[in-house]
Amino acid sequence: KELGQFIPSNTVITKSNYRHLPEIARLLVSLNVDQFQFAFVHALGSAQENFSSVVPRMSMVIPYVKKGLDIGIKAGKKVMTEAIPYCLMSGYEKYIAERLIPSTEIYEFNTKINFDKVRPTLAKIKGENCRQCDFYNICEGVWREYPEKFGFSEFKPVEKKNEEMVPRRLEQVLENLIKQNNLVHQRKTLMKSWRNLFENFNP
Image 1 (spheres, rainbow, N blue to C red):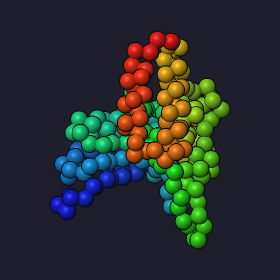
Image 2 (image 1 turned 60 degrees about the vertical axis):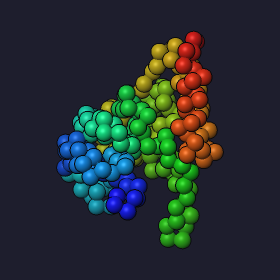
Image 3 (image 1 turned 180 degrees about the horizontal axis):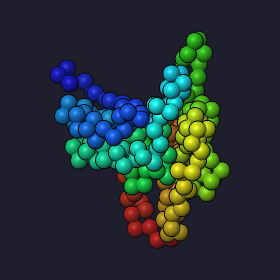
Image 4 (image 1 turned 90 degrees about the vertical axis):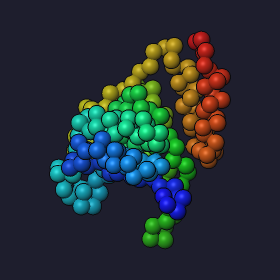
């Protein structure tokens, strides 16, 4: 910070720390980070071997996630979550990181991986009921390892009222276009224009 650098932070949510997320948020605010993210643990490697002691139930985590986000929001920080589906983030949908992650290629052992395609198709999964959710087209689901252990009972499809459906679906289209065309840096301006356009929308 003294050198004028932009400082982001990522906290992986685990069974041992999820109750402390509000405290962690207060610490990060006091350290004056520019951005912080709460990412649900991806149970691979040793985390998978010790699944029961590392991975908490998402439904238990959410209240602490939202309290932590509120602390950052109140302090004027950029905050977000990762790997938590829309159905659990009611009222906080705009803080879901997957909405903003640009198209990314990573290299692993001399192999090029299109990360934004691998993540939602191979690393994550959705349940059958998810097809009924209004967020189906933009939600990536959850890490595959989670429902293999706990199932999908925590995830309930979100259905908007009819008068909200059209602008919401149009917003989903815009979100997808922003990601597909690598316009993440222009997202704020584009979304502002969208809101001005549909501010008094009458279905």
